Length: 398
Image (cartoon, rainbow, N blue to C red; front, side):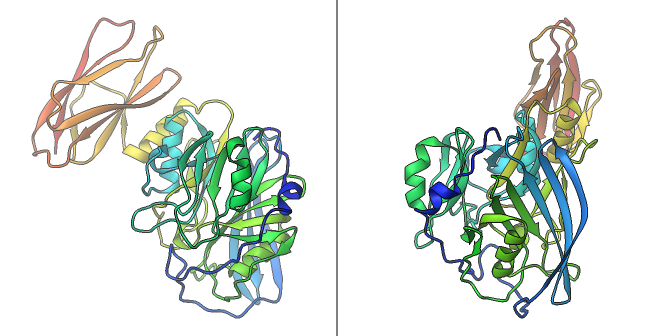
C-alpha cells in the first residue's frame, strides 16, 4: 500500500454518520446471549509478530465486567509496500460463497503473494451476493444492491489514498478508486463513538479502522464461545477507539469472522481466530493483504494442497480419483521457458485444467467428473519443454 495519505479531514465534512442498526437474523447476527452494557476494560497483549515488513498481527485477551474474550488485529503501516485488495470466491468476479482461506489460496495460485486475509462485507446468505460495492484493481466487480440500507464503503484510490464514506463520497471518488468494498455501518467518526445501536448483545465482530497517521487496521473478535463472549457493536466502536481509530466501520461478523495469515517460516495460510460456527464459513468476499513479489514454489504447492488435495509430482504412476474430486500435478520445467503440455486421452469422465505456476513449477488439476462410473479410466499425457519424451499415466475413477 504505497503512499497512503489519510483523507479523513477531506471526507469528514461530507460524510454523514450511518446509524449502526443490528440486522437481527442476517449473516450470523442473530444471537442468543444477552449481557449488560460494559463499564470497564482490562486488555492484555498476548502475542505480536510481523507477517512482513509493515504488517503486524497482534493477539489480545480482554475482560469486560469480568467476562473474558479475545481479539486479533492486523495493522498495516503507511508506505508498507503491502497492497490491500478485495477477493471474491475462487478469486474471481462471480457472486457466490467461499471460505476466506480458499479465496486467499486461489489468489496465491494466480500469482499474488498473500500473507493474510480477513472476511469482508455483509451478504445475502442464500445467494452470496454482497450488500455493497466491490472494486478490484480499478474494475467494478459488484455494485451496491441492498435498498433501504446506508450506502457505505471503504477503500483506496489509485494513488493509495484511504477513502471511506457514503454514496456522495463514492460518487465523487469512484473514478479514482482502485480497491473498495461495502460496509455495514460506521462505528467511529472523528475519534468519537457514533454507533447508535444500544443493544447489549455480544457476538463475534470484524471491523476496519484508520488511525490519525493513516495507519489502517482490521480487528476480529471471537465470540459465542465459553472462552470468548464477543462484543456488542457499541463495545466494538469503543475498542476501535482504544486501538487508535479516528474512523472505523463494521464488517460482517458472527460465524463469518475469520482471520487467516502465513506466519514467518511457514508456507501455508492458516486460520488464526476461532470461528464461532466451529469451522470456516463460506462468505461473499474478503480483504487480502498482498506483499510484493511472487509466492514461492512451496507456498504455491501449499495453496494447491489446501484447495485440491494431494499434489502429485510423478506423472507416470497410476492415479485413482473419487468422482467429484481432484488431483493436482506439479511439473517442473528444467529447460526452456515454455510451460509444459498436459492433456487427456479422453474427456468423457475427466478434465484437466492449468491452475497456475510459481517460477518453473507448473500445476495442473485433474478432476474425475461427478457421476463418473467406478473403473472408468483415461490416460494423462505430459510433455516438458526441452524433452522429446512423452510421460503418461493412467487415471482411474474410484
